[in-house]
Amino acid sequence: MRLPPALRRRLARWRRTACEALGSARYSRPSLHEIDRKLERHLNFDGGFFVEAGANDGYTVSNTYYFEKLRGWSGVLVEPVPALAAECRRNRRGRVFEAALVAAAGPGDTVELHFAGLMSTVAGALGDEAVTAGHVAHGLAAQGLAGSYRLRVPARTLTAMLDEAGVTREIDLLSLDIEGGEPAALRGLDFHRHAPRFICVEARARAEIDALLTGRYAVAEVLAESAAYQDVLYQRR
Image 1 (cartoon, rainbow, N blue to C red):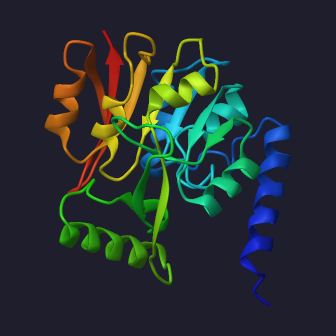
Image 2 (image 1 turned 30 degrees about the horizontal axis):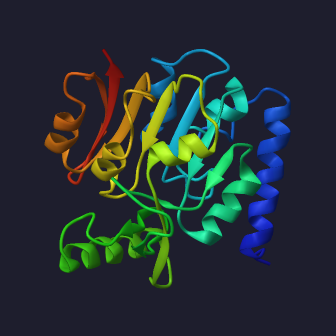
């Protein structure tokens, strides 16, 4: 008999937690393309601090889960889809912000989000309606999801979230995987106050990301590459 999805998730979480208690990372490296392993080449230390946007459920394809659970890191997670943010809170210790990252926002501002699981995207982040629809359809098919829907979610800047969370220590890693919203997220970060040592970006518009970071950051490594995007690691100069 096939177990219900919620029960399967609970059993998988129990198995991971048991292994982690024994110091085993057997089930605790969930990132795509082994990005967490590649990041560890540059960030091979305990007790660091991360910010991860596009946190999903806190585990699936997370770039920071391993660092929190096995290396003692702490941090802030950002996930705009309410159901996923709730699951993220169950899987992680850090502060979870239920919002979408934008370049500028005032109190009460919202944006429209197209749900597609791991490939959910803010309206306009990828271009016009046709491009967004194609992206959502691909995301649903790739993940076996039944359908999409649109919802309004709070719009916040990275700087506002970090201030609300009371972050005063250095950020060792900023991970951005928000389906085209990465340039807006970077525009909403005050680099004079919060300049992460490393920034890992799923770059669909590589030239735009490079331009935003030029002078402050250099490319440390291209961690993964596909026809649609590159996962690029930038290091603060």
